[in-house]
Image (tube, rainbow, N blue to C red; front, side, top):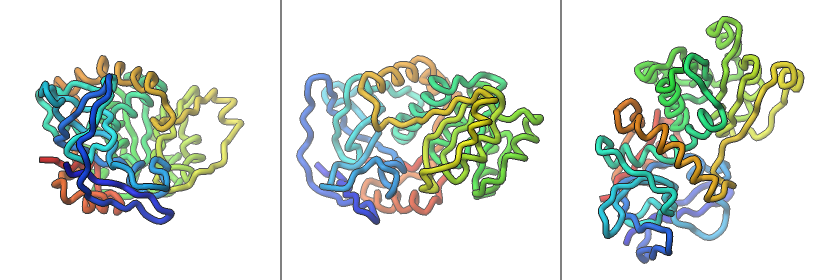
Length: 315
């Protein structure tokens, strides 16, 4: 079979298409005929920590396809998904609703599982509350916007692109702030009547961390989920943390155990999957590439030209 391999160096992530043996499932695993897979910045972009330097490894984090031997349609965490076949642990398998295409299904799992974790499991976002998403046009950012609107929340998003913000208005973005700088707290406070937002999703990183703390309301929650700016340190206003009774938490799948991931999958399947099946939630697919064009898809992500998820179809 054909499979992409990824090698991390200090300066780049190298992709190479190779012939590889079809993987053999162990007990508790499915062999999946992959139909589509989506790109995740954490794996493919230098400095995001998900791909360690060393020998080349099978590329891909999540995707969708058919369970070999049964034809069952599944999506979920799928290591090595940029290939014709990959292995999925049974607890990670999520049934694909009939109304989702393979491309839609591939754009859903990791991104919306992360969003479920930070909005529901840890963030406790409620209807009527305010959410601020920095870097709102990213894959996780768009998914956070969509899920928050489905939950009945109001959403403010930042982006350096006015065209991307205009595109997201059709998904319910209540206020778009065009900026890549830490200069948006006044607009956020004005929009929320001086109260601040109840939850922050920080995709951008340390360069805006102090500004996002200024944006939080009393008993606000702050999720750190990415660092597009590659800035991994920031000052913390401890007085604000103390007086406003703030909650700060991180969102990452990297160090989670299989049982911990399974809990999020169960919650997602119970609370979010019906929203996809009903059409209330649908991932925003930015662009679909053929399997052979994965390097071009990676280049689009590196150039930050996308809004939503980039997907590769595997025929």
